[in-house]
Image (cartoon, rainbow, N blue to C red; front, side, top):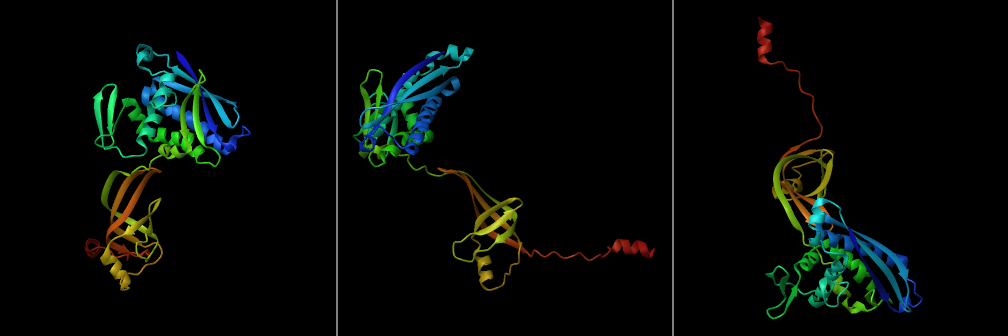
Length: 311
């Protein structure tokens, strides 16, 4: 089972008077349209359907247009056939994104929001949530639009489709058009900032302090600089916060040779950032400093063995 939607994205401006567009600007936008629709489909419909996006070029004077064919296939399984009424079709999906209807969907919401902070989200019913921007300024949207708004992948793709091309000199307008020929959405250059990907705050996944043996790879005695350690095959930088240990170094009471080993209280912090997963390290306390040079153990027999020999 499948349905199809046809629409056109048009970039306008003086740089496009020859109906040409730099492939380095166009290619990311084309890929982003597919990413945008695929991610939106996954958020709205889950795993019950798949979006395919096909494209061919078309031209108008002073613009560069791309025709998209969106093929929305519903998987032919018993569950999806029984629940197919709950699947949002391709045209409706375009409407939720705001590519189809003026002032509606995610694009319409972003244009009205204008990068202002949301104060509160109020559930009205199954078909509406109320977004409170100020005490008097509110916007009612479909709950599914809010889900799209909160998706980093959707917002990142939308930035590549709209904001990035409009940031180029000579590209001044983004438009969409559907089969009836009427332009549904128009975004001007001065509105591009509304469609930029917001910075993601760091999310702390976990924190821990454990005793650990670390081998010193490199030292740094400058303030706030990090030392480099290895722990088995893992090599990382860590800030040394043990002031008494650092004071002993300043007084030449601690001396280092290559590959010295420290037993420490190691603080780790796992963080999910906008650029991915990372782990931060700190040395809370140095418990022991072992010189890398190993000594041979003396071959001293224990007392019990001597007693047996005397017998």
